[in-house]
Length: 120
Length: 112
Image (cartoon, rainbow over all chains, first blue to last red; front, side, top):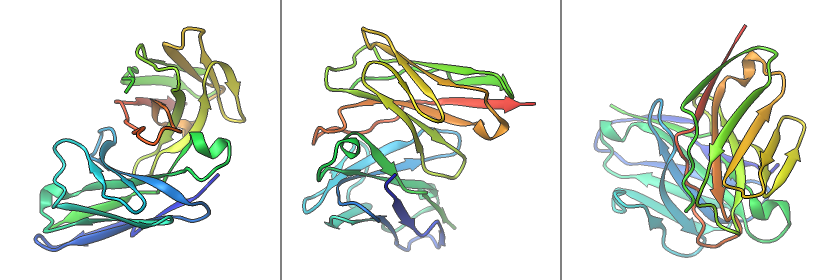
């Protein structure tokens, strides 16, 4: 299957600093990417949807100024957690869909391995 | 979006067949049913996908009745390594506005 890679796998940062998480589709063009947040023992919560070349669509309750999403190319989307605080500590996961053609890939979403963010 | 309902947790012994049912009463005509597996601190992994009837691959089977209001993921002869959370998603993957929203998932615990 297709591969989605996230970087870094884990990061520890000081409160008040910003952290950037990268999500790359390695062998396909991801016209749509999703960013999720997952707290311990809970399900994945969709934060935002980004389409290449346009602004991200944020879910209700997600601060767009705090969680900056950039999807500048067909293989890369970034999530920047600005002025991070301990309550932002969570597991962040990206997902990508291949919308450029092909039968199976049109109906499947591929997930990165996740990024564990700890804000101290 | 079609909302999904799954059992919160299930227990099984190694070697048994496990069936996890997901209800999606409001499934739309264009929606596919997809199941993902997630281990702790990892991203979800695709297991199987179907639209109707039965789909089988090397790791699981997916049974979908004619009305498509539910689906059952069947894992044959589970092992300890199948202990994970299983999510049922219903979405029109090809739709440009389609969002992938996760429900609570089913936490499967396999023991000896």
